[in-house]
Length: 143
Image (cartoon, rainbow, N blue to C red):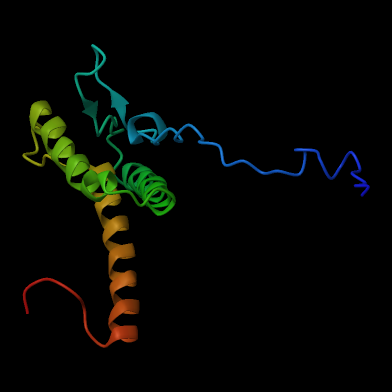
């Protein structure tokens, strides 16, 4: 009995082997968002709000809107568990930074923060309008 084996029949070139890939590096908002940075020394945390106000309320509000768009795009692209708490960290640092400045007007938030929060709120409202129209009710929260 004769067996004809062609070189491709006996080759392992067609065999696919599952290989483990190194896990992708998780994005870090301190590296990706323009208004954040890592604190020094390394490992001592993140500054979640590193924004200087210009003193022009209108320009500062515009800047806040831009930063909110950057934040919203980021969480849309990276909907991770860690990013579910990101807004709270940002707001906490907003308040901390502005309280440290002790504004003579008594207002701690500038147009940058007001613009940022207003833009985030606008997107939140739009999302909830769509949810309520689609589901007929909102999910969560006190009724």
